[in-house]
Length: 62
Image 1 (spheres, rainbow, N blue to C red):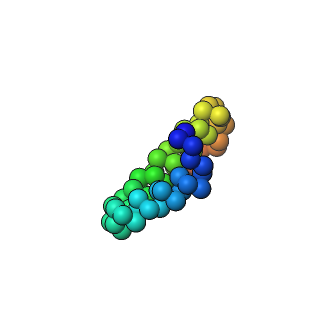
Image 2: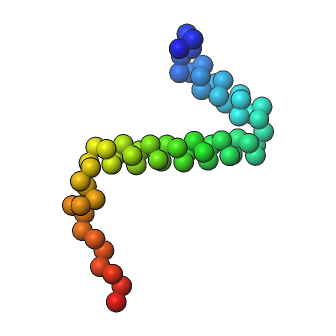
């Protein structure tokens, strides 16, 4: 991008998290985990669009 490698980007991100403080860092990390979870779920759904039709449904409780 700007001539930065992965290591430099990770170091800059870590320094930013330290400068922002623990509360903000926790919120940012939680948001990043949430976005990653959404991304992987959507990617999986796009890869197997009919997967939900093939999985057996749980029996309803009696």
